[in-house]
Image (cartoon, rainbow over all chains, first blue to last red; front, top):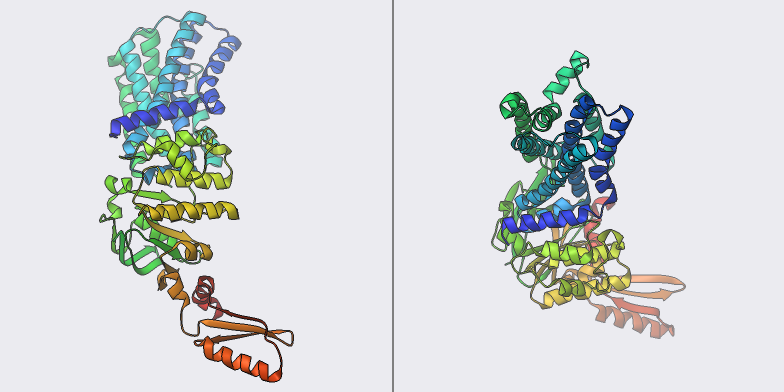
Length: 244
Length: 282
């Protein structure tokens, strides 16, 4: 069977298995909404806060469904010997990666869409002003975070350690990147770190797309930083990939 | 020839795990690779499977260099690794169908499941199978592509005796279908039962090679033993006829009986232990 068909089969297989894993389904689909609803309730859902929170949670979702999910997946499959088994079959590696990554991308897209809908229906946030920009930042975010997740998996020694490794990155990054609140009043050092990392820029781009409607041309720096991380992530993921 | 290995070497830094191994596996035969842990068997087999690159030597598997990782080669080979995992949430049938799809002419999933004796477990998730059943699923995933060459690394480890016998039957039936099998095993009776030829590997070298029966048939290879005054007497000889004639003659002359008299040939296990234990003895 050709590579594209095998990638499609892998994708379908991954989708089927995803829904059989309650913890993955929870972390991927429930956690961001829990954050959204709790924070909106606790801090009072004023317009200004919601305009930060909706793109912030959308960015968090992209990070969680790609970086976190793929880091776990690749460490688990490496430790289980699934990667080694696949390597012994005629399945082209590209079709395997394609199917697995596409499954993560599907989760990211569904989540961003749900957050936009919930934002509109529950919290009266406007529909996105610039759909093209929304798609560009979701796609670029997925590529950057996804490749960084696979790259990061190469540094994680085993599955028991995966949660510690992933959260050591995930939690600080979401807290400094303006996911839940504006970063304007943050200390300069933290601001500088956040600006060097991709999540803040993805959120800025999503903010532009959903809330302000300032176009891509106003977010070129954000675009460039995220693209830079995507290239770095892809390089490390390919160069240092471990099958076993 | 299905496999040709000539002067194969593999080093990991200072350590030379394989130090010049040569052997051939003919098409349609079961070739057993025996040796203690760390002897270099798995390294050798993983080079043939395309998992590792060799440091030196020539290797040909079905006419391909496995280091090239050619897709056609992988579609003609089935691999059972010592340990490799499953998607724990996929059922037996789903796993067999999923892995089968990568091969140009896969065997029917139901037929493959029946071949390894997993009927009735089709809808059980891999994570819920017992250790022995997972080993059978391993075998099923190696066979689903209908390969002409099969690598079996410790295929019956953890099996109960009945399951082992059943696995042996599967291996014999594969041989009957004309498949070539490279078998790595710790169980010497398994190698003796199944292999047309075996090679004993020690410290990265082959120390003996040949049909199991011929490996056993070495000089002084008959063992005669009997009881005398409550002690067991063991004698080794090249010519049991003469020895027995002498022993029985002496016994008759004394009017005694040779209690528990037996004549045996060393098993492959004894040859193996002798060849691989030299280091420990010296």
